[in-house]
Length: 172
Image 1 (cartoon, rainbow, N blue to C red):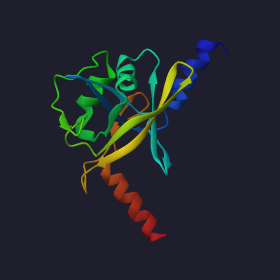
Image 2 (cartoon, rainbow, N blue to C red; image 1 turned 135 degrees about the vertical axis):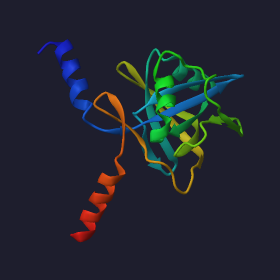
Image 3 (spheres, rainbow, N blue to C red; image 1 turned 90 degrees about the vertical axis):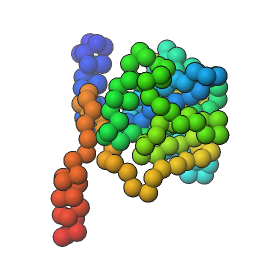
Image 4 (tube, rainbow, N blue to C red; image 1 turned 180 degrees about the horizontal axis):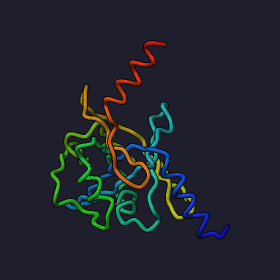
């Protein structure tokens, strides 16, 4: 199998792994930049650390590293337009209202917001692995269903299926 065939197969097969969707935002002066990520994961509970991955050539990731602080906004199913906006070449936000608080910008009505400082960065092939130290976090007690990414497209969790699953586990 050629390298190109392996890459195509890798992307197709990894696409079967459903992930949540988040937008990383940073403010550089009056300019707010962002990038959509589905590579978000918790790293450590003590200290609180998370990571996301960004393409090496990402200008938004370069801004995050330069300013040293960012927010991670976990999106709900109703926020697909925001995910699409920051997944494209448009890295700045003028279309969406952002909230500003204590030197961070965030997306209103997100399922969760983690305010972070850059703890470290590691090279990982054609991506950078950016580790953030969580210094604050906010989120509503209840929120809308999450925005998911599966097989190359955005989707949402079907609550009926979730409720059926939970009901089935209670019967066991």
